[in-house]
Image 1 (cartoon, rainbow, N blue to C red):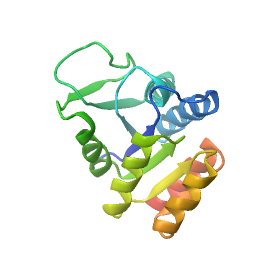
Image 2 (cartoon, rainbow, N blue to C red; image 1 turned 90 degrees about the vertical axis):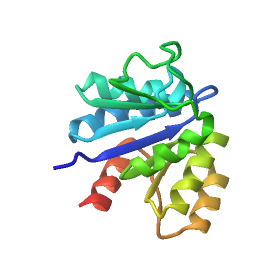
Image 3 (cartoon, helix red, strand yellow; image 1 turned 180 degrees about the vertical axis):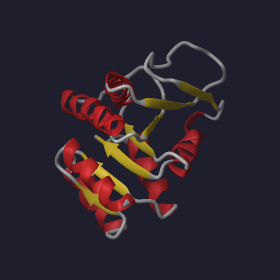
Image 4 (tube, one colour; image 1 turned 30 degrees about the horizontal axis):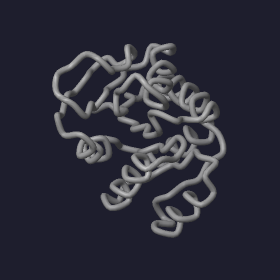
Amino acid sequence: MRKIIIGVMGRGENATANDLQNAYTLGQLIAKQGWVLLTGGRNVGVMDAVNKGAKSADGLTIGILPGDYNQDGISPSVDIAIFTDMGNARNNINILTSDVVIACGMGAGTASEIALALKANKQVILLTNDEEGKLFFKKLSPENVHIVESAENAIATAKAILY
C-alpha cells in the first residue's frame, strides 16, 4: 500500500518564530501518523523546522531541491533528497506528489505553491496568521482551502480529508 505524503510548504528565509514552532510540531505529528513528509528540502526556515520535527519522531522525510547535485544547503533531517535542477519550477513536483498540502506561514514561494495546488484541485490547509492570504485563497477555492489555527488542527483536518 502506498504511503500518504503530506507536503508542508512555507518560508525559507524570513520565517517567523511562530511559523518555525508550528512547522516543528507539524513534522512531529505527521511522523506520528506514519505519513511521509515532503518539503523543499533546504536547511532554512519552515523546511528545516518541519523536517527536524519529523525526524524527532522517527518520520521519513523527502526533500525536493531546486538545484543540481550539491549537498550544501540540504536540511540534515532530509532522508531522501531529490535534486531537480529546476529552481522554483520544482514547486509543481512538490504539489503533485503531495496527497495533502499544508502551508505553514506565507511568502511569495508559498503563495505560488498554494496556487499550483488549487489549480491541480488539491486540498490545501492554511496554518498562517496572514489574514489577507487566508481571505484571498479561500475566495479562490472555498471547497479546497481549509483554514486552521494550530498544527494539531491541521493534522485533524488532513485526517478528515484523507479518510
